[in-house]
Image 1 (cartoon, rainbow, N blue to C red):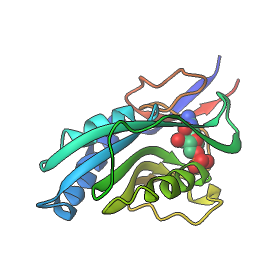
Image 2 (cartoon, protein in one colour; image 1 turned 180 degrees about the horizontal axis):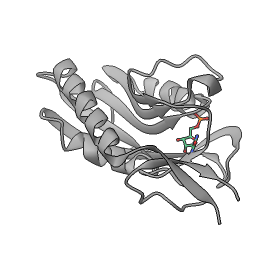
Image 3 (spheres, rainbow, N blue to C red; image 1 turned 90 degrees about the vertical axis):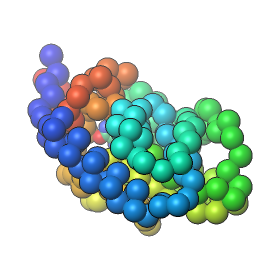
Length: 173
Ligand code: 5GP
């Protein structure tokens, strides 16, 4: 049986998301904001963050694919589900679970920029600084973590573990 060793507790995650929300509330005061959740991994982060945002917020989702169910990247990014709304002239905040190589988000960012949003920024719950393969500015980062494969709180291994309230390191037996 694989094991999952706790890296970030449920309480630590919630405390950090509150801090991120406080910052985002300040930065977008008086503005409307479109949260763009990157499916599926961001679903819990987006829900917990959005609950703490006090401004005029809308939510949409995009789904991209670069991983084929395992643990290694293919480097190919495809849009599986596009946005339902137009983003021209709007403040867009991309909500991501984890920045690993950065390839997925840098492709998505370039694509969405061509649609001429007013502003576009990135919030990622996790980032692996040692794994970054492309320059990518992440405007709001929850936690920098080591270059380990993690699951829980939205993140999966072959679609399992997304429901865990904490984040843990996945280890094969
Ligand atoms: P990147 O393009 O930055 O290498 O990868 C981003 C995507 O890879 C994330 O949205 C996530 O779906 C997946 N990913 C990267 N690292 C991990 C990890 O440690 N655990 C899981 N479950 N997914 C990961």
